[in-house]
Image (cartoon, rainbow, N blue to C red; front, side, top):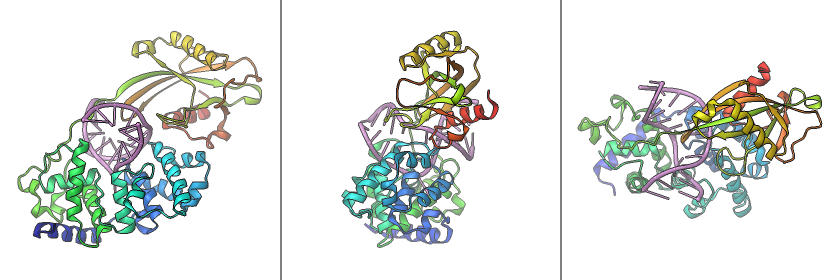
Length: 368
DNA sequence: AATACGTGGTT
DNA sequence: TAACCAAGTAT
């Protein structure tokens, strides 16, 4: 388990970390709930992005109980703009479970923590080690990169199976009683020194024993197969302007409970068949009006494109043309639930995906 | 195993 | 600019 080389690795890494560690908000807390929140937010998300969200979140929901009791829209609103919104919904569902099953205390058992919604192998290890100092590995992208280089491993880190092996290796490296700092040190090294493109080996505390560095292969590793290109999706959105009591307001709707941007708010819109169909605005108008009728909305859509937006997701790219629409009179009301009239005064009480936040902000400022 | 799931920063 | 990347999880 602990030969000379692994002892060296852990000791040097810990010395470096204790000197160089960044002062991050969640590192100032020993509250397992705060550690948990930070780990969920940090999934696939940069530290700099997370900091303000983390501070607002724990300020508004200081304890598991506060989060468990909060309205879901409130939680979603505090996640707005952070992305991967199922994280927020899973976190609250898990908080409610912790409140009921564990008296509001984050469990310290591997099985219990791993059973929480949104907590996978990495996050479980992070919580157990950082909050409870248990010798569990926490293998994320940073750790796989560092280990791939230090031991010159050529397994494809894009493959799920690779993580399993990395976990055994990482576990074997944890110095006795130092799991919390060691796991964070490994990630910190990956984030600050052993970076993806051009690692700063000159400042690396373990460079002299790094196998990849010795062989001059530090920039070739880790091996990672390329992700597929995002698919283009074309859409027509309706900007339905209210009259009378709803003057200055726009009709918006809430997205379905599951899937992409679940439960977030948006402009009503339809998908065009392809890029060519998206160029045919007149046809878009007809299809948009028909779709609105299906929703119980008799609106007249104009062929004048008043806004255009592109939104890039990991797996798809939305191209949206915004077409203005008018309604017959102020008694107009949607037949289905999930629709609301929203003006500048109500705008901030809803949660918007980035695209629609931009589009609507632009509209309220310029009146298009 | 492969894909869905956001957003912003970097090269 | 078009990848590529960032403290992954659920299905």
